[in-house]
Amino acid sequence: MKDEEYSHIEMDSPFKGDFFFKNKNEKAVIALGGSEGGRLWSTIESKLKDLLQLGYDVLTLAYFREENLPRKLERIPLEYFRQAIDWLSGKEYSSIAVMGLSKGAECALVLASYFNRIAAVAAIVPACVVFQGINGSAFRRTSSWSYEKKELPYVKLHHFHKGFLKERLKGEYYHCYMHSLLNNRNEKAIIPVERIRGPILLLSGKNDTMWPSEFMADMIVKRLKEKQFGYSCEHLVFDTGHDVFEDSESWGKIMDFFKRIRM
Image 1 (tube, rainbow, N blue to C red):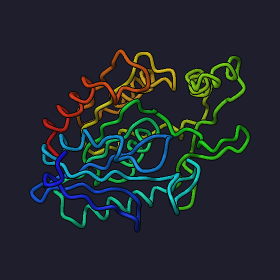
Image 2 (image 1 turned 90 degrees about the horizontal axis):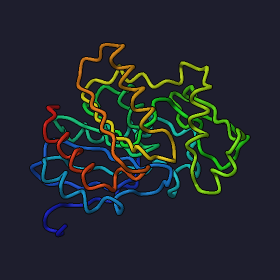
Image 3 (image 1 turned 60 degrees about the horizontal axis):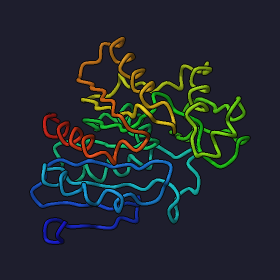
């Protein structure tokens, strides 16, 4: 992407991220990474041009593992993300969408269910519930997110089920998340996706060994049908692992979604 094609602002307060914009764009996308944390833009720089050319300015937002942000992915306040939404709203965009990957997809669905200024969601290998935060400890249980100083209800992870240690050595957590999900008794942990006020795109990997993204995306679709969701929801399954976002076909489908939706 040539420098003259866009402008870039590095944001440090009241939130941390990178804002890419063209003067004539009227819509915006907030992009959220997953459990790797830190700033996201360098990993999706090659894709920014496509969104900018479609008429979407892009705010890639860091929310932990960055200077002056939480070190661990736990109890991240939704108010932090609302500051970014408020900031974009102040620029008078006609609409704001959110795109998230993995834990960022979980966050994207939560944000859109809480804040009605989010007009569309692209959730890549998403969760259908709020899961326990990721803090490096099997014993300190907290929610991934909080709101108004209270933890969001969450599904506790069963770290010591049969086969967990072997899975962990390979950096895979599918059975841990699936076991925890199937044994969940906290219905309040389910993300109320029916409250989202706009179209939803879900992408999952058939061979996802990180967590059961296909199963969870199916659960989201099922809930939306049961709740008679008033907007479109599409679930696309790819013959990949957790790295759906790196698949060129999947990015084409995301672009198609942003082309056709009316926000």
